[in-house]
Length: 111
Length: 488
Image (cartoon, rainbow over all chains, first blue to last red; front, side, top):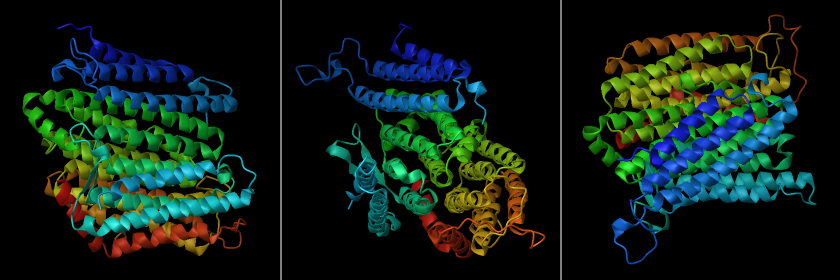
């Protein structure tokens, strides 16, 4: 079995994201690390659905075993939308925080 | 009748859209807009109350409503389900949200100018109802995100420096929680092949023999992710900041309902795993005990009233987790009753804290002594005694039942911890209560800010509800008996 597949790369991306969230001090970099995590999740789900040599899940003259599972793709569309709105809100909050604290460094934001 | 479920989610959603129309710049007078918003939100709540009332008789007889969206079969489609557990928590959340909104009509007048507050408040109720009725685990995640996004916005309605910071901190930690939840859901889908909770429960019971390590991985992913939502101790650090910074009605709903929704999801997830091995039960109960100890000790040293209430919430959530962890029916009953009691009493206390901060002009507990109105004083004392667990009030009943359960399961060390935390809770609550009774009557300051009746009324009703539940707990306990029978 090939170890370099979508599932392992997805998990590594999630770990890279967690590393970024826990070590970066710049708030924008933290939000980018969150995005990397979500990319990892999306890759993980898409790889679960993958069938070796499968085709697109459209009705046609295929055996049911030949098609790629479409459900995780549908789920990931939802996750992508949720992630988009969360990121947009986070960036809006960053703008406000920068206005009030005049820094993007999380260590310097004291109450 | 089962079509009522979808209406439970749709009603607040439609109200959200109608309310957000009033937030667009108009030529209509600001005062008229306020009246329109008030009417819209009151009608939204009345429809919700009517829907819940229509379900009530079927629910109390132990029936279960199911509705599959779009007519898909349960294996790949989305199934909504309303049973007595979700019904009871739905009633509780609608009641607490209603009181918080009525309170905010006058209290938050300056913040509600943009119409943002009401719209996002109803969006949050949509999410809460969605989490309560969804039987599909991915759908649950989507509705959790709706709750979270609206809470991020609601926290910022205070428009102070710390509001934005608290909201950002909450956003990052809840995103981490969603990532872990999604990872667990992905693993479940790849091994079991369905997202419906009934199929997952079956699949997990098969997997237990084949791959026990996978079950432990799934359990820990769910525990960490939901623990971040309700603030189990190593993961509680965002909670005091966000409850402290949010405006009082928002921290009421956060502490009263949003954290309880996390616990509801935990109950559902625990029921997927069937009967846990006893060391796993012990682990959950130990986490609860750690939560209690940390919450109590941190609350003792707080000088700020809202931070103290936030740490007290952590303490009470620990009591609930001990009840869930012990896992026998008696302790489960206590935990469910404590969810209800804590939601009512802590909601009342946060509303009181809002008025106290407003009239005294300071968030500090110590310092000047004030003479507040006797109604407010009495309800604060009643609500805090209920949280501490003094006999004629409801907090005592649920804590006692959890202690019975702990002794029945031979985990008697946890009774000691609950007892110890109750004594220390009385220390930090009495520090607030003594500021109501100034030593020298003449030197005491009478607050000159007028508090309107519509702000005080929700607090009185919550205090009376706590007292009645403590004096006559039979009715509530009978309903909880049915819940325990259904979910165990």
